[in-house]
Length: 245
Image 1 (cartoon, rainbow, N blue to C red):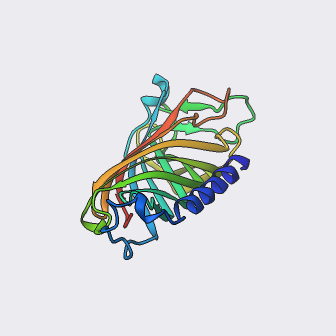
Image 2: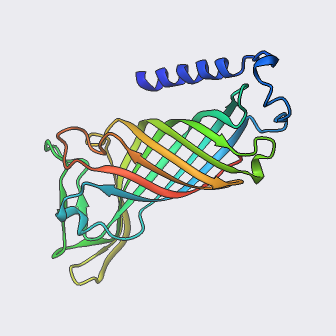
């Protein structure tokens, strides 16, 4: 959490620095660029396909289905006074990921030192099963907009980093089946525990697009699980962003 506070303070510093007036004689090439109607804050929404790198063979063989993510951030955009094509964006929001598995049991409430990933091919199992995690995040981006006076009709690109703190981690199984795939009981089982999941997350991000739509990628720099809690796995997301930038 101290790192998140540090990033937040840094963002405020950048905001103050870039909002200062630059002498007119130093910006002769930007005087005619009008950005008075450029939105200073907006909602950024991301839909993604989520994946884990570094899975062992015993885990990857059970990682099936469409794993998905949803991110939503309220952002501020601070253009450079000396060069309005460039800006710093920062904000606050939530990031969620649902990693789906088939015939797998992940015991988040285990008392062992490592998180058990157990294949249940020859026994009762849930028809639908997932590991879901949620982080409260502060994203920071260095942005480029080709036409700062018309952002919704412009090529855009951004590089950045997200710093997050874990809010929730749980597994969810739905519809218990026998080993032959016959329905035993139609119910939902949910187990919550943050013990094995990294309490903080750092992700490198990149986006490129046109207007309000862009493609994005994000890669977790630290590991999904705490050190010593299991395989060295990193989450990565690929998807679409909808934003006014």
